[in-house]
Length: 417
Image (cartoon, rainbow, N blue to C red):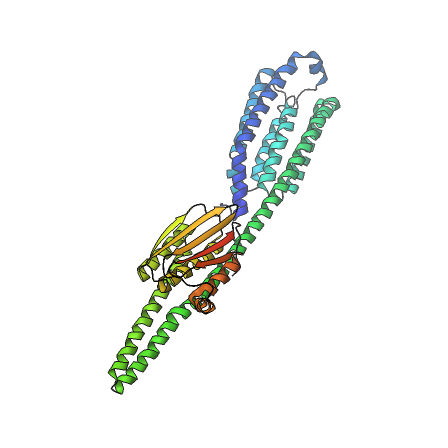
């Protein structure tokens, strides 16, 4: 018969794990019992005080009976898990039958075996039975009957001495039982918490996937879908001019459509690169993907120089990467340069990330230029910086390039979608 559930399998494992210590304890009891058997005949006072065994055993054979008793009890402990898988009651029932049989032959050494085996089988009861309290009560009654029988055989004086040891071990076993129950409760509590954490993690993961899908849908709509829609409208207009015989105007519109399609393709590639970057765990790896995409799409070479980088969360890294993506896209479209630099420094828990280009630049005091720059994605950069509790600084001059600096604290935190 195999264990029917995880609890049964765990109890069976506990019984197997505890066999070694219990067998060592049983061997120690055997040595003590042999010592008691050998010492009693040499003491005239004890020999006169203790009544004879229920079954008369000659002195030379008493150690042999002790060894036999200890060996069979060790065997019962060793095969206990096997007995448990066949019938649960055999785990405790077989040793109890053996002890009851040996009680008649080893009355003089019975205190050692009786008191010593009590905690062994109580521990097995605690580990092996679901309703261990009932089994422990039955065991205690069984050993109480054994003690009463032993007291009748050897007398009240010896019986009271054994009772004191028996009560002491009962207290230890009860303490162990309470401690074990507390450990079981704590383990169940931890398992429940772990299950709740797993459920919460799955919910967060599902929510993140949904949010990411929505973001992908929005960005593809803003890039690929709108770009294709514009191309279709322009091609339809070109078709109309061709029908009217105005080939020059149709050619002009087709050229514009090709430019629009290229722009949509470039932006779609940047979007896909941004999605790929979210799977990377480090900021340098993410920025390397972005720089490579900008190089392939716009032929702008980007040099990355990062020193110490704070331990930012994935959501923070995503926002930082998108700021860099939008900044490099602006460089590629408007700076008229093929070189850019990304540098990052950490000082006094403040992280500064700079995107530097060596292009045409613009006048930061010209309101018309700033308004036009707002269409270059700067507004989105400012909004992302706010989500990071950071600040964007733009320094530029005509003919001297532009430097966009993101300054933010080094604190790690998760950003809400």
